[in-house]
Image (cartoon, rainbow, N blue to C red; front, top):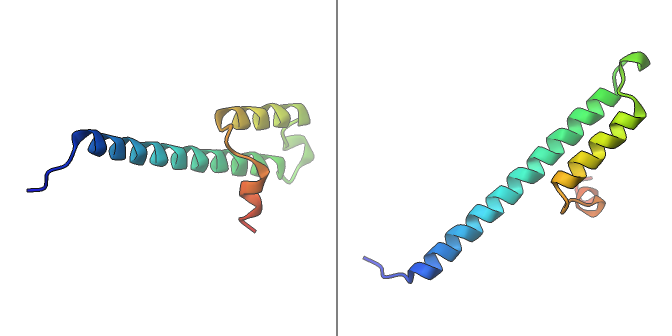
Length: 77
């Protein structure tokens, strides 16, 4: 049986939970961006989202995920 300081154990668990939550928020943001991109790519221009709504959606995604910035996405390609 190992003896572990409970404060250290709780700290490590909290860090793991925070990292997991951060990762999940990034995934949710990417999914939102992909959905927005698809809605902007509709074949018929009349089926596409109006520009004002696109901007509102982008602002909402950014405000929900304020740590996201363009530099993180430049590493993808």
